[in-house]
Amino acid sequence: MSEKKLILVGHLVNTQGVRGEVRVVSRTDFDDVRFETGSQLLLVHPNHPKPIKLKVASSRPHKQFILLTFEGHFNIDDVEKYKGGDLMVPETELVELPENTYFIYQLIGCQVVSDEGQELGVLRDVLQPGANDVYVVKPPKGKDILLPVIPECVLDVDVVNKKVLVHILPGLLD
Image (cartoon, rainbow, N blue to C red; front, side, top):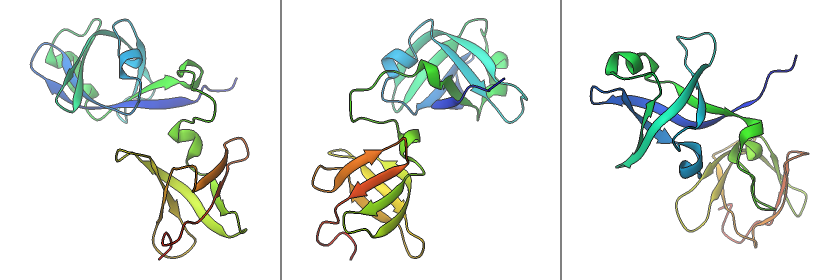
């Protein structure tokens, strides 16, 4: 039996108050869908051998967090043990993306090659500072290469074959 691939959607960082509310740092662009009342989440925690099924009872934004409560968890003692855990969903339950748009987990590990055939390294992270995303590429030697995700730089993304084709704009490798 093949195991479902789980995708990170949030990190449970702390409790909030004494009524079972928890602070979550979101790792999804779809907070409204992923954390809506009734949503099913799986908590993966180093102190628990198997994922714990949780159903969202309430959700609200608070500063840089999402505050959640879970059905059947009514006080701080019920949720304290979940601190440090990751909230996950099966890959089969991901939101459908528009064409030529990818989840970060699909991009991580892709080989990045220039349009001149130069192997630049492996895509290890995607930064989201504002105007456009930035690919962080780990070369075989030296420091990371930062590539803006703009049409002039990123020419093709093939997540099936784990390849990203880029054009190196002047000054990017200096």
